[in-house]
Amino acid sequence: MFKGDYNFFDYKYNITGYSGQDFGSFPQYLYLILSVIIIVVLLIVLRKSSKDTVKKMIIGTGIFMIIFYLSKTTWESYYDIKYNGGFNWFLLPLDTCSIIMYATLIAGFCKGKIKDYASSWLATGCIVGGIANMLFLNAFRFYPFFSFGAFYSMIWHLLMVLLGFILIVTNYVEMSYKTIIKGFIFHLVISLVVIPINYIFNFDFMLLKNLGGVPIFEGIATNLTNNHLGFINPIMMLCLYFIAFNIVFLIPLGIKLINKKRH
Image (cartoon, rainbow, N blue to C red):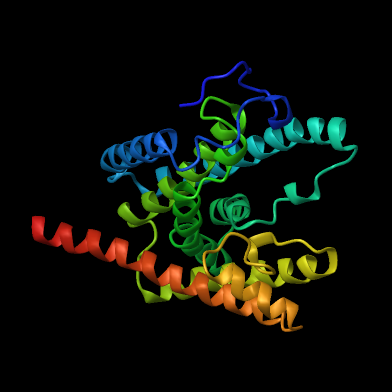
């Protein structure tokens, strides 16, 4: 584990001697092990929570996430402006993992179909994004384990997975294939807002332009772009998201089968 001369709130430009050695090594494995233990224990403790209690958890998580995001963005923007002379527009809350802020507020305060679709995303896409980033925590490429940059990413994605599974184990969201479709439709609506922003301003929010970091498919996306077929990239990424949503559906299905055997 990296040990260096830095403070917890130091920015990446101020941390010397670190070149991402915690990524894919013991600190990341430690994070994954601790996360699994925390999630399992809390799910066992909270599995009998009432719907009113779960709703409060959703609202509380949403408010916390917004405050957490604003705090981290303010912290990071201070250094970006100081060292780069401007705001880093890639910090805009338009990534897949940012959707939890919108989904929790909609699921917590709205009623009807829009609440149903947002809740469905929390029980599907939220878990997809959380697990993917826990396994491939890019923050460790820039920040060592004991730093705010890494801490923010570790907590954020842990909460995504935890909240999603809380909705499933408490039956706050009744898992069926309709839930997958509703969750994906919610995801698709957000994507339709993000895609034009990506192409107009050359971003890769939600990986819907360049599929940045997606194994194998990033190279395919690059080739398509080079051959003036970049419009296929968001379609390909949305298909990958849909496949991931379906894979997540197997997890609660397995939980139900285990519970049936117990009873």
